[in-house]
Image (cartoon, rainbow, N blue to C red; front, side, top):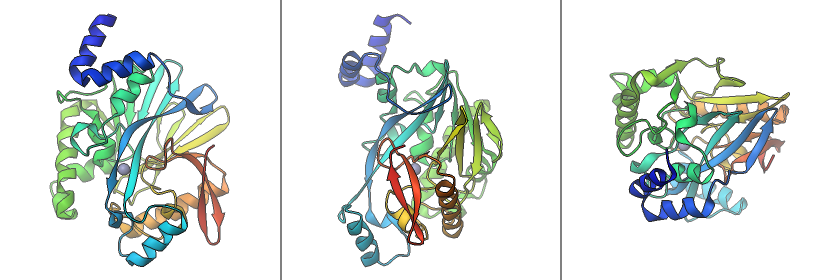
Length: 308
Ligand SMILES: [Zn+2]
């Protein structure tokens, strides 16, 4: 595509702000957060949004929640979260892990396209998108504003258990009413992607050097991904751990978004134990950008150590 056509297309789709961003940032790349052999791991932001404090922990006394937030030096008025999309550059081959919320979920989210433009990523070069799960902030960015695949040459990969849950005839009966739009969105998008969608089971190598890990609980088919190369590994967590204080200090607290609270808690503790024991770095989709960190055992729970 010629530069003039690219600029006019960007201007048409994203308005003057996107054009200005493209002109200012040029082909700058996102900083790599890790290098695993020949694989370079980057994080591109889809933006962020606020959520009610009550979403952070369910069935927990408000005083206990406020005390934990205050102890961590966090706001006791509002909760803000961010969306960190992982990009794996394997030579010329690009893999995204999750693809943001798109334009229809929450104000403040859906910025991934701008971030990828700024990082010099041609969306037509993305070979595959791997989903940790099918919640809106991870899936809905799969379609563009014309309801076509936002990554025109990509295949889209989701755990079979996750796809089956969202496409099941009785999915609404398993969700609270305020989550019914999640099901409608997941069905619409998975159907629109059609035969570009491929399913896998935990344990499968879903891309070169990328293995799916069973982390069910947040949703029935939630997975994390272990990315390896050059003798090192890093885990892309999705929403198995979402909060820099609560997920580590109080892994026994289910979040308002955990589909199966008991399973989510058990998964979180098992995962934290492994991450801390094996000193594995990880990227959390909702941890402070870029979401890279490690876990350390502390006082019968864990502590989040930001950075590699
Ligand atoms: Zn999420």
